[in-house]
Image (cartoon, rainbow, N blue to C red; front, top):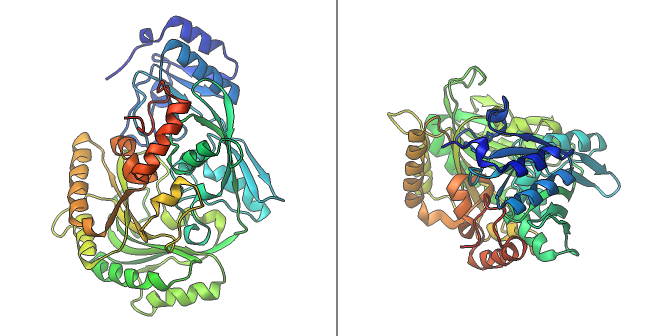
Length: 465
């Protein structure tokens, strides 16, 4: 599928080009193909134009112009987890709205809608403060918050959405509004966990920071042949660990790429991964459970400054094509462990998944009162993420088939809920009810109907059926 400049009305084109707070990239421009791409190369946008605002006024101009022309607007910062592609729409790239301000007295950050977590780290860490980012500082702050926000400080401080205090956004009618506990609390509720791409353009967010400067964190690598043993031992360990430790168990197949360190390149491992906040002595006592059991092939756990948090998950930073999904677990039975190992590291055949990861979540603790993210944790003690590289459509179809089979096989341990931040494509768009539940979906639909009854923002979550 492709589109041409002729599909965009000339009056619309000229109006957008005249806006000083906006760069417009259209088909035929030399940088159009790069501008229209998501980070996840499995999803390809074919918009009428890519609009790149440099201020909130530029965002307003795009929304107003699209409304008058009868066009939809697709919102993107980094495009790590696209929902509905921007085909036939204006793709609104907000990546230049990346100002970061730190209030050191209040321990808060105010961040532009297009900023990545690395910018927050750079601004906050010199003041001894840290944000509740996820597995990598390379993703966008706002997209992560709108999907909930599960990171390496989860069990100590909760989800990132729980500590948001204010949103600024541009609505479908071009207004600049705020959402907070005092100002439109219903919209504030919706944005904290189920607000991705369908309620408005978030241009600024304010959230709490925490006095964390150092972690005891990293990875213990065991041979893939021990995967079942490692996963069972981890399952038996985590119910008694303190909330100062957030951990996971990972089945990892490293690709044979030059970018991958030689010591793991092209190999498969069972990995115990995590981050501990607090005294090093306590962390080392907790890790003795592993080190005194079997010496790992590689021991990469140790004290590190919080600024090196990306080393824990080692997520890729270069764009690539991939498929992912996220499921909440009520437990991890022997049968589920066997299925995960057989799916991720199949005997006698090449592995399809790059990794499967089971993370220990908050111990029976809901999210902040009144937030959507509180509902995603109901009944769950763990979260499962599955990720695969999918260079071709055939690879994508094969992975979806394998994932569907796995879900059936481990259904007894699933809560039935999904985690939106790990979803992409149609599963992300249509999986809202499975993520937040039918009652919350009805409430969310009321917010959508009030703010965007005409579906101007029709490329995010689908809540009006």
